[in-house]
Amino acid sequence: MQSTALDLSRSPSHGALLLVALTLSICVSEAQAGPGAPSVLATILKWTPLLAQGFALNIAMSFLAMAIGTVLGLALGLGLIALTRPVRAVSWLVTQFFRNAPWLVLLFYCILLMPFEVRIGGTIVPLPGWAKSTAGLALPVMANVAELVRGAIQSIPSGQWEAAEALAFTRLQTLRVVILPQCVKRMTPPWMNLYAIVVVATPLTSIVGVSEAMTLTGDVLSSEGRTELLVPMYLYLLTWFFIYCYPIARATVALERRFQVS
Amino acid sequence: MTLGWTEGQPLIRMRDVHKKFRAATVINGISIDVMKGEVICIIGPSGAGKSTLLRCINALVPIDSGSILVEGQEVNDPKLDKLALRRKVGMVFQQYNLFPHRTALANIMMAPLHVLKRNRAEVDAEARALMRKVRLDGKEDCYPGELSGGQQQRVAIARSLAMQPAAMLFDEVTAALDPETVKEVLVTIRELAEEGMTCVIVTHEMGFAREVADQIYFTDRGIVVEHGPPAEFFTNCRDERTRRFLSQIL
Image (spheres, rainbow over the protein chains, first blue to last red):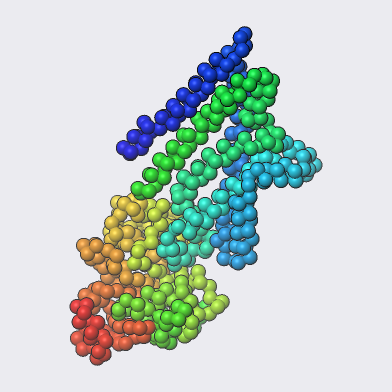
């Protein structure tokens, strides 16, 4: 507990560094600004509501990609430890493919290969860019979660399997009530870590034209047409991501430490 | 499947059991009969195949050849209903293997609830009674990590008993315990034996074996070297290997 408190008191130093950089860059560009131009700070504040909207989309995509990827990854992870060899082999191939493909390539494929609308029953459901991008992000999440699941299951001592087997549990029951509940604890820190990675990967979708925070920052900059805004604006955006992700990273470390003790 | 088995016949009947792990022969033709209500202790040096033999009885480990009948049911039969067999034979392990994410009481209730699909209220009452039986009432809500080794092992015994098995297998259940907690576990097992539970016990506790066993089997290198009732076995064993083993351990 003491070490955690110590770390938390030290943690703002990382954030402070970023804040100093942001303030410094605002001051520098303030100095560079031509006479009569509105202040850099005022410009940033003016566009903040719009950027917040874009950022909300980043968060929404990260949530959805994580949720879909986790559900699929759980199934794929169970496939990796299946008793039948073909299931194992196919799961392994799928996992390796999506783990090792660059995320941007997967994003492009999803944008290009998925239709712009799908017909479910009688209704036509449009598939906007952000939805396809979310699918593109969910694929690597799936593969990474599958690996987490496999690793966690294999880290459970074999005595647990043996005891459950001796009590006449079926394999599926053993997984459901004995093994997987124990895996949740072990998987939580790396899973949170993966989530933080997904969040910072969402700006990739700006390349395929999704109106998230990165795209909107670009739009703002081109409509303002002031080069001195470039550095502070992107630093501002970076700060948003930092403020969101940093607590997750700290919590991950804290959880890891706590689970190590017990 | 239990057709043809009557109480006069051995509950567990092993005949010429063989088991190899790759090149290593672990069990090399063992035959043992266990009658209903009988307590047998299997002793012998490490690596004599004792633990493997226990695992063969409830089909955790398949045998290569020979026959093991449990209530007349052939364990070596490929069509064997393993789950039905394991409901009849409880097993307790050296490392307890309790489920660490559930409380002591929940550990006992899990198999009756999930495997036997029994009513929760009934199972709960029985589990509490079992906790009293192993003298752990008051510890129902403790997690395994909060219990001593001896307490965990007694929960493990209760967990096996909750399936109401016809026989219990004990695999060196005191080997991982502190000396002061060994006794409480042995007392629990002796009480079970006195109640008429059929027990197959692999142990290094000679004093306990002598006290509780109806038959003692000494195994070495995958075979039964010698067996007999404890009084006879400990006082005038014939085989040189048995004598050497006993002199080292007693």
